[in-house]
Length: 136
Image (cartoon, rainbow, N blue to C red; front, top):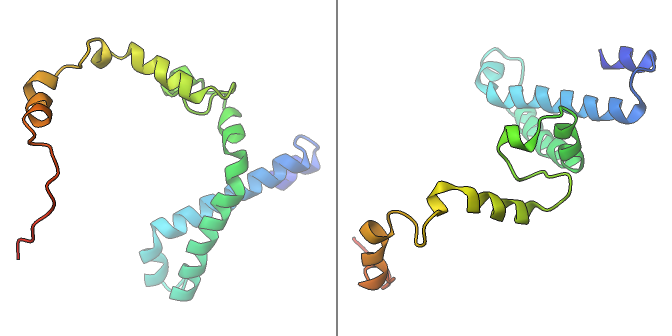
């Protein structure tokens, strides 16, 4: 396990801490996902379930600062993920803009479907908000 790897000096204390946090989050995730089984079989009571849910949120806050590094550790490229987010260079918004320019839906101005679906709503005023009326 994680402690054995640490004892062999294959991973350092920072890696041990991150992996232990992930292992705890993994366990809490499955408790939340299968909470009915844990309650029905008597492994947990409702107070413990409430505690587990709170701990899940705490663990996500604890892991969040290392989230990009943890994903990057798997060395899955943004190209393979088809994602501009999580870029190593931090230029997320520029990358999203460039990706949107390459999308076939953005090849024409305005995009496909404008004439058929959107123009009448915008030009004829059908899309103008006129307040809500109660149906009661």
